[in-house]
Each structure stands twice: as structure tokens, then as C-alpha cells.
Length: 180
Image (cartoon, rainbow, N blue to C red; front, side, top):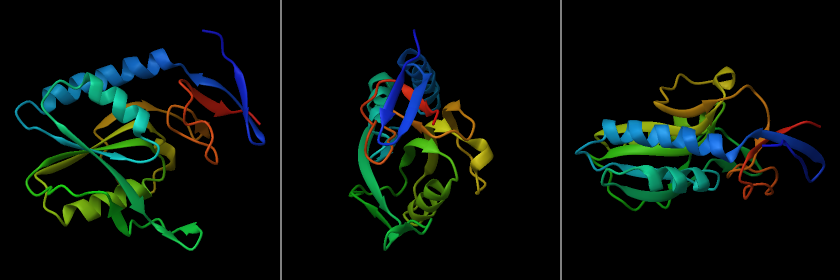
């Protein structure tokens, strides 16, 4: 595949991870999840907006009986993120004694996942694991055990495949890295 350059708002981005690699890595995650969750009927919690493509492609490949719910997190005060999850929006399922897999598009600082894990623990699930499409280990500010990682990346700003830059780029099939 030939890399291409796109422009979103005031920035240029170049192809970084092609869709074929993304799908291959998601397929490997699905196989691992199938093995780990035999006879457990996990509930996947897809964190919107960014994880929608990852969640769709992962769940198409998971073969164990499972459920999915889509959640949003409220962590904003005025116009700035507090880094603390105040509320989990859309979680209507009872998760007590359930096996939960959080689906994230990207884990960088870990603030969102850390806060979500604390909120979910209050409801006494049987287990909680995290699956992410991308992870930036050098950016982590919390000790997190992220069990399912499709790919680690350096601290580059990326868009595509659910990830956006000020609202644009979520619909791109490949992942792009900022060049300017």
C-alpha cells in the first residue's frame, strides 16, 4: 500500500497503520479473548465516541457468547477535562458478578481508564479487563494492567479508525500520524 497524506483542519497527516494491519491485530485479540472467556459470557463496554470502529470489528471476530453496551464518560468541568470520571453515561446493565471488558480506542495518560475502573469497581463485577486498539506506554500516568493491546505506539498524535482531530477523521479506514 502506498502511504498518503491528508489534511484535517490546519494539520497534515500521513498514513501510519493500514487497515489490513489493524484488522490482523484485532483478529489476534479476538482469538485471545475467545480463549480467556470460554464459558464466561463477557459484557463488553465500548467507550464512545472513539472505540466504535474497534468495537465493531472486534465483536465481529469474537465467537464466545457475549453482550455489548456503549457508554460515555463525563469528566468535564466547564471546558476542561478534570481527568476524573464523574459519571458513566448509558450503563443500564447490572454488572455485579459479570465479566467486563472495557473497549477503548487509545490509552495514553490512562486517566479515563483509571477513573472508569474505579467507578465500575463500586458495582462489584466478577472481573474487569481493558482492551485497546492503541496504547502509548510512555504517556501513562497511572499504573494500569491493560491486558489486550492491539498495538503500542510512541507519543504521536494519530487520527482515523475512530480517532479524531477536533471532530474530523473518525471515518478513515487507516490510522494517520501528524506530520505538521
